[in-house]
Image 1 (cartoon, rainbow, N blue to C red):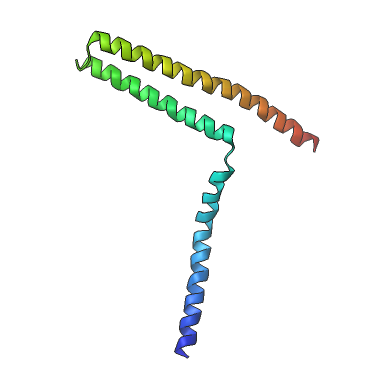
Image 2: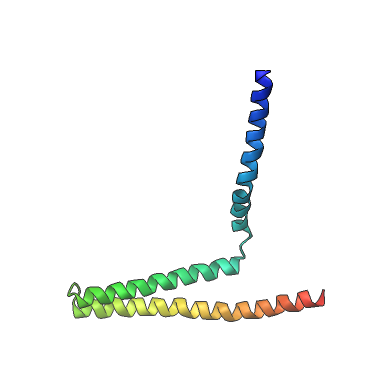
Length: 111
């Protein structure tokens, strides 16, 4: 009798665990469903934020006297160039995404 009770408790525990964990596994699977273009946009947005942060840190270091004028100008020019590249890629991808969205809308409308 005790073994049947134990067996049913284990089975019920497994069912409850699967029920609770299912949404977690389902959301983990959605990472593979991310559109590559969307993933690229997210990466570029993160790079842009990092560039902005680096520029702010550089300005702060210069203002506190940790950098010479020459070093500051050289580093700032390089960071600005990299930030401009990232922002231009974001803008180009945004325009492309709009065109892609319009095409998706047209295809869905014609169905």
